[in-house]
Amino acid sequence: MGFKIPRGTQDILPGKVELWQYIEEKARELCKRYNYLEIRTPIFEQTELFQRGVGDTTDIVQKEMYTFEDRGGRSLTLRPEGTASTVRSYVENKMFGQPEQPVKLYYIGPMFRYERPQSGRMRQFVQFGVEALGSNDPAVDAEVIALAMDFYKELGLKSLKLYINSLGDKESREAHRQALIEHFKPRIGEFCSDCQNRLDKNPLRILDCKKDRDHELMQNAPSILDYLNEESEAFFNKVKQNLDTMGIDYVVDDRLVRGLDYYNHTAFEIMSEAEGFGAITTLSGGGRYNGLVEEIGGPATPGIGFALSIERLIMALEAEQVTLPFETGIDCYLVSMGDAAKQKATGLLYELRKAEITADTDYLDRKLKTQFKAADRLDAKYVAILGENELDNNVINVKDMEKGEQQEVPIDEFIDYMKQKTREA
Image: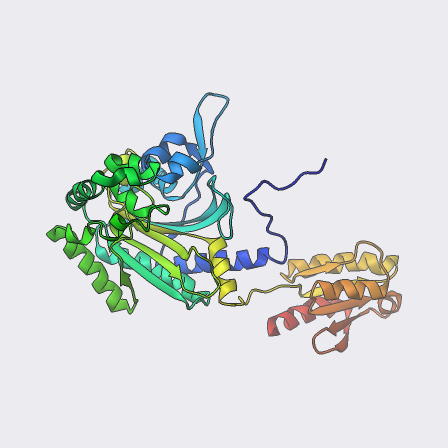
């Protein structure tokens, strides 16, 4: 019996993995420019962290988590998202005491959700996310949004649309919550069981329901923007002013609530409008989560962040037919014929790699013609040929595969010659 990959996962093979490496490196470069530092957290955490951090009423906690009991009887969960783990680490390691605030972090890593696999949605997927903890300045909200937009634009995406909303502070949310309950309660029996369960616990989540989104009560539901108090409205206006100053276009969408319970004030999503991208157009989303640090056991600390799926990013790149300029192939392929030449090539290959030149050779004792075919498959820029005649004359023939030109080089000058050629490239 053969083994097959689990449903909802994927193997990223050589030839495709270079694309992922390029994207991840672009994320790291951008975060360095914005002064966000990388954090790496465990792939599994205590289940209660996500129950409290993500929210009991969310689909993630209710339906999608991979939870198991370890041999010590502890309930553990594979992380379904990155914010709760990052905040847990922030609290546990007392980063709130660092002199430099806010603490600005980013992560890149696998997340796990048990949901129906479909294009761009996997059970194991890779998220890139950032978190800024320790500042209530609306300028930080705009900075986080700008970083997300810059990431997509620098990778070549053009069909983007940014949607923003304010969920308000605790007072504003409570007023809106009561209005939603009064609005939906008389006819809540017409909604799905999830919406019925959320009516008293978190009625805002009803607005995020996919099953009942066309119900007439959804269309005329009370808008959060009508319930923002003076402070919340001023905060949202400042976020918009900062985005205007940076020249970042946006659309205010008062139905944008996000799927996690910890959001307040700023919420945003970035959509792809590319033709052929698919029915689900969301590329990424995020928002402010003042109160989450306290929920996880830390001091009162404001925070904001976003997360995006690398898989959905790659879908968007394909929809817009963007080709990223990542490098493939190797610098030099060593072809050797005869035992003595092969022995000499072993040393030369080692010296090439020490000189930071990507290089490889044949390990199957194949014929000259077959070795050249291997060099072609590896997309080698140069092929160095060493046979008995070359060895007797203390030279090696180096062929430029693009130009078709061949140069005889003294063996003791070969490494320096290749250094020069790769620098010129």
